Image 1 (cartoon, rainbow, N blue to C red):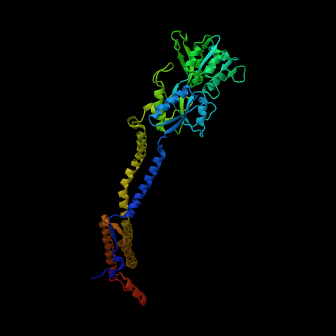
Image 2 (spheres, rainbow, N blue to C red; image 1 turned 90 degrees about the vertical axis):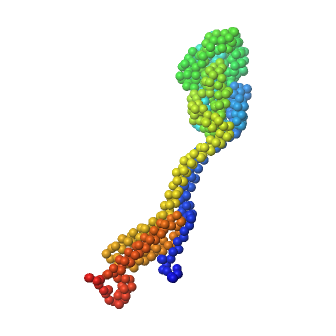
Image 3 (cartoon, rainbow, N blue to C red; image 1 turned 180 degrees about the horizontal axis):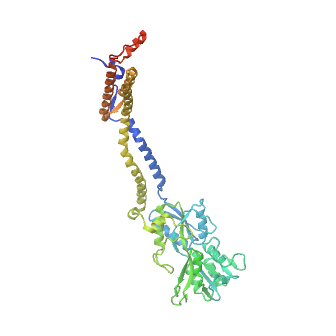
Length: 473
């Protein structure tokens, strides 16, 4: 019996059969893992982090309508575990300045229309209009219907930094009245402005937003000799200043018994918007609009029930999240789950969906990649066999026989050293059979009459003779 040690090197079977080729499996999984990592990174980059538990709103002077609204927001947001810090301010102008300054720790601000002129408001968005802030002009003397009629008189236009002052200056400038001219513009505001008008220290008071509170307006309209201006040019103002709206106060709206005002009064009014930085978390955007709906959604002297908050676009673009909310309301998860659970579930869903969409097709490719990797180690030798067999069919194949035989031995030796999964053992043995077939064919062709063996050829050459001619030559 012939032992393995006596067999030629190319005939020794050193192949190993394994259950799984871990190397091939790792290489097959490599592209899938890279795709998965890329998908996870992209999802994490796109998905918003958890909403912060604390946000800051710049409101207005303590006790003002802005401050009161902010305090109600604070109470409502606390139900969902959100802490709203309310900062006092001089008014709308300062609120915009704080939001525009990225170094200021402010996320939101109540901003009256018409106060952002000259400020860089890029990166600021509106969560919607919250309520009207009509500009009410009270004055002494004969009936006046145009602001230009106050030229050369004394006018209270509000404190520095307030929305009332910024809007008053804009409207007065449109009527040819500017600071430094013959018209005296004073910084009286709210109750102080009302008292100055009652005491005849000013001829007119322009009140809006925080300065135009119900008690202040009621006090002025009931004071003999003081009138509320009817804007005869109200429609023209709304055409020139797109952030203004025209409102009509019906007769008797302030006092039915005394029929005050005695005639319908046309006033112009900006809206107050809840303005935020673009970085505001989408989930908080929904909560804030919900809170605003609870605070501002009821009917009053100036608005119908459900009119506010609204997606009216003025100086600030409406945020994408707010626009979605006004169009379709809260998302499914936020309608049916507590806020923090819905927020977590929302982020998990957004994170997993793209990963699943990418990984399911990728994992389906793994078996094919694995099979291709294993079979490629077998198939690579078929190319050498085919090339060798083609050369064996050439006319001078008997001359090249030693070289062809050596190449075949190299192929067989390499195949016999392969490590192959058991599932592919049949293909391994088919390859060995094909090698044996080529060997037999090569040997048969070399044994044909006229073929010269490598030993005979060498002997003839060494003897200096000529090999015998083939039979039948």
